[in-house]
Length: 120
Image 1 (cartoon, rainbow, N blue to C red):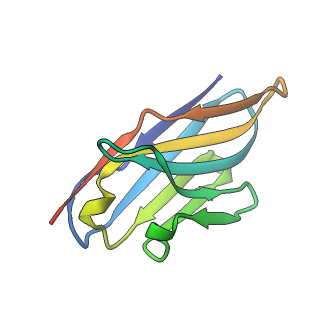
Image 2 (image 1 turned 30 degrees about the vertical axis):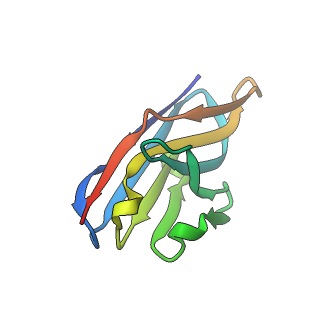
């Protein structure tokens, strides 16, 4: 099994910055795609950013230029640097990871979520 532990959320004023972290642990053979999603109250969960094991990235249009996703493969950790926060960025941010267990079984798991609240 694989567990994801997120950290770094909080309450911040508009224009501020946060850095979210998510570390994967368990019987991991390979950690392929990792990403961040968010869900605002009353809204569906949406993609924020994803990164492949090779470092290829993709972002939602709404966050391009403000958010940066990165990863440390040695630590099985993905980061999301969030700059120039806006009130509309307020949401629960979820980490997602897809890869292979040592048994070669695929996994696709979610973290518990971390709250980001932006005040105007």
